[in-house]
Image 1 (cartoon, rainbow, N blue to C red):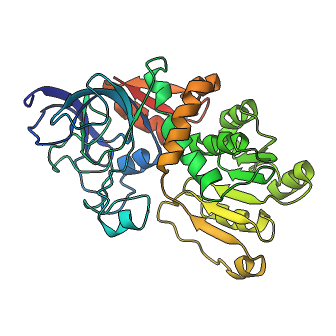
Image 2: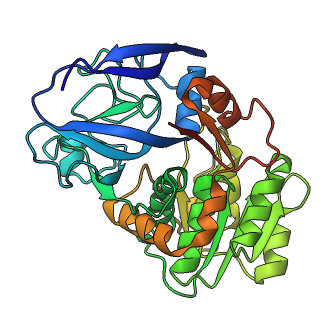
Image 3: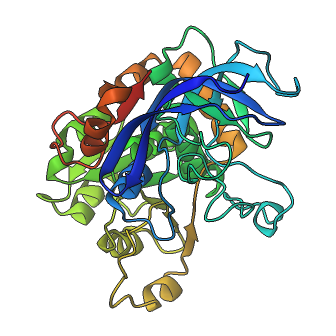
Amino acid sequence: MSGISVKAQILVEPHTLRATTLNRRPVREGGWLAVEATTLSGIDAQAWAGEISRLTYPLILGRQVVGRIADSINGDLPYPIGSRVLVEPVMRCRSCSSCLAGLSFCSRRYPVNTYGLLPSTEHPGLWGGMAETLYLDPNARLHHISDDIPAVTATIAHSLADGWTWAVEIPRLRPGENVLILGPGPRGLACLLAAKSAGAGWVGISGLDVDSDRLEMARILGADLTVNASAEDLAMAVGNSLGQRPDLVVDVTSNDPEAIYVALEIVRAGGQVILASTKGGRPISSLYSDVIVTKQLKVVGVLGPSRKGFEWGVQQLETDPRLDTLVSHQFPLDESHVALAATAGRLGHEELISVAISL
C-alpha cells in the first residue's frame, strides 16, 4: 500500500514549517498508523526553535501520538488493523548498549531513535505525529486505547507515564511520604496525580507568575499546596503547610537551572531529588556539591517513562474524568505553526495547560 498521499507539516529549519504532501514509501516490515491526535511538548518547542543540538532537519515533529492501525506489513503488530493505539516515543532495538542498560533511549539511530526527532530523510520519512500517517517501526511499543476516550485526551497518557515513572517508580515513593514538585506543566501535573495515586501524604507544587491557570488546575487535581514562587517564599510556604521539609523534590521546570538549587536546599536531609527536565544547554554556575554530601541526598536524573508508566497512564485515562481538562488548546494540522508558538509560550500563558494537534 505504498504511494498513498499523506499530508504533513515538515520543519525544514528552525521556525520554518512547510505544508506538504508526501507519498507513503514502500517498507518491508512494521506498519502504518492513521494519526488521530498528537500533543506537543517542550521538546517539540525546542526543536522548532532550533535549541536541540545534533538535530537534523527536515523532520516531522510530534512525539506523543494516538491513532488507528491502518496497515500491518507482515501481520506481526501486536494489535489488529483498526485498533486504536498510543505509540511510545522511543523505539528500542533491545540490543544496543543503551537498551541493554535499561536506559530511556536507544542509540540505534543517530541522533536519537525517537519519533518526532528523526529526520525525514531517514526511510520511510514519516516519523512524526504532525502528519496524517505515521510509520510503525517493528520496534515501536504500542498500547491499546479505548474507543470511549477522545483521541486528544488519550495523548495525555504520555505525560501521565512520565509522572508515574519520575514521582513514584524511580524514587520508590512510599505511602505517606511528602512530595514537592517544581513546575506545574503537563508533566508536573502528572507527577502530582501519580504521587497522590501512590498514597503520598502531602503533595505541593510550585510555579511562576505565568502559571496561574496551571496552578489552579493543580488545586483541582488535589494539590495540598500551590505556590507562585515569583511572589512567595517557597521554603516558607512549604514549611507553613507541611511543617517539615519534603522527602522528595521533583524538578520538572523548563530551562531553569536555578530550580536545581531550590530542590537541593528545600529537600530534607537524606531525601531524594529527581531532575526530570533539561535546561536548554544552560550551565549551572556556582553549584557547591557540599550540600549533596552533607545532607546525604540521592540525586537522580531521569529521561522518559517506563513501560509500567504507560500502563498506569492508560489505566488512569479510563478511570479519571478530570483528565479531559488537561488539553487546553487544540489546533488542526494546517495550524501547526500556531500550535508550536502556543506550546513555546509565544502567544501568552493565559489558560495554557497543554497543546494538541487533531487530525
